[in-house]
Length: 387
Image 1 (cartoon, rainbow, N blue to C red):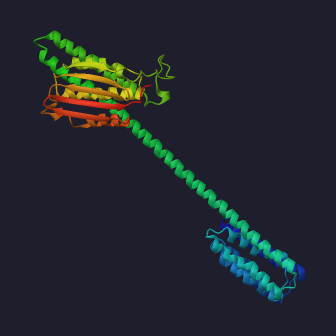
Image 2 (image 1 turned 180 degrees about the horizontal axis):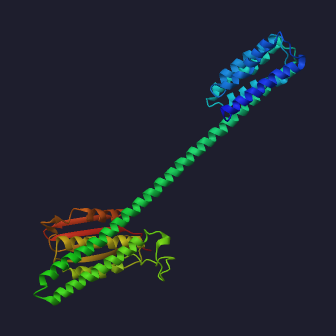
Image 3 (image 1 turned 180 degrees about the vertical axis):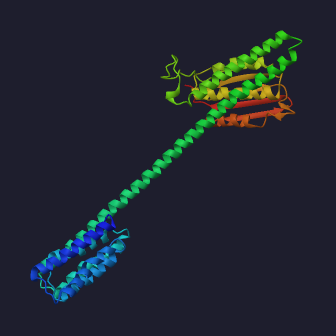
């Protein structure tokens, strides 16, 4: 199809002049026939103005108009076929099924058939004219096919770009959820220790000021450690250009400290002891190198289990056991006092759901048991079998 209606108007005007001039150049202008010739010129060219709307109708009109011009003994010329060729090209490029566009091929058949009794022309010339019409129509079909293919590629590119944005948004959402879990673990554990120690310090402030001072030191140390770990996690959310360098130039941020792992569990248990808990730590089996992500998940699960014990079973005793099996890592946190108090139940809540999500992320399972003997959390992470 043509680019715009303005170009169609220009083309129609040019073809009208060419159509009339090519005939008049043969025999000249006869005044008595001029009105009829002008009407027939209009019938053979002005239908092109509707070629954007329905080129099939335009082709049908021209298929009748030109034989009428010849039948009334008006002069003929090869250039007078240009309007029909333009209509055939537009029909081939029409945005309709091919079988609908193919209906316009009746024009060359009709032109050749009518020429048998209207024109004094050789069969070879008639066949040539018919082939040219078909070729022009086929060119329009090819151009329309390329245009359709380009639109499909553009639509597919748009869909892929949309899918890429959705994946990026999902990755951002997942990362935010992961950081939210990290912050929950850090803050919940630190605040549990701080709350217990603040209560102890307030109770002993007048009677035993030295022990109250110890509680305040524990609060300070726990708060500092929690803040340091929060800074490490939040550093990844800053834009690279906004991180302050170690020399104060702002050209880049310091390298974040490594994420905690199983080697940090003894320090975590010492913090729990500062909160008045008595937990022991032991390992069984042959220790082995594990992926950093799995070690972080195991550390966070242990941290959340100890936090639950601090909140729901203060002053309890328990054990943290890390067991290395050939195809599994098992973390067990058990406390001997009941985990249920009047202010809540450790067997339910966001903490356990977060632990379960972490374990399931690595294809493991989380088991919890609450009974009169106490509360036990067991996390099992599958491992590749050691050689």
